[in-house]
Amino acid sequence: MEAINAFKRAWGLKRGILACKGLVQAFLKDGNAGQAKGFARDARSNMPDSADSWVLLGSVYAHLGQKDRHGNSENFEKAKRAFRKALTLDPLSMDATYQTVNVLVFEKAFVPAIELLKKSLGHCNDHVIHTELAKVYIRNADYGLAIEHCQHALAYSPQYEDAKEAFNNQWRQQCLRILFDNIIMITFNYNLNQ
Image (cartoon, rainbow, N blue to C red):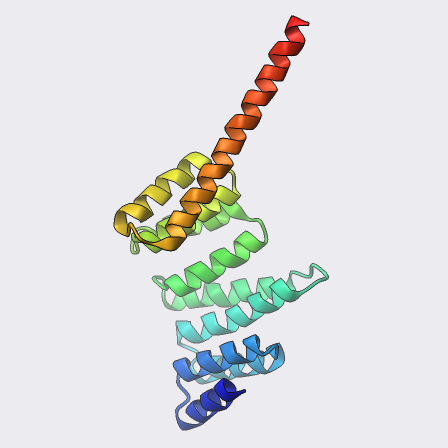
């Protein structure tokens, strides 16, 4: 509650995106998505040409979509529309890109998520984007490309924990897959020889 009150005071003094972002995040953490959505809409109304205000609104809708137990994708569609608007206003916005990717991955739309990340490599080629690509490739069971992007991420930042974790997870997945393939082949050959 302290954080909410502090961000409300800051928002009251100056209706800037950082105060509103803190307020929205505090409300979401507190479980009050309705208030969060209200303030995100207020930010969008006060700053309609700000990509950040659209990302903020989209992030609230994405949060609501993830919490929806009925599988209603309306909130995800609203989130994606807000993120598209943010990318229209600022095509280089990595916040809008990563938020969009999170929604796509949640929906298991891995190929569009990969395409969006690959498109962003032209203006953001760092350890974070390569790690995100690796994670999506892992979810899409494309382990060779996952390893490649983990290696890029670790080359940029050898101590980046997310990249090391993605690499370790990917390595386990690939080893299990090879083991499973070998078990199937051994079983097949054994059955042929019987």
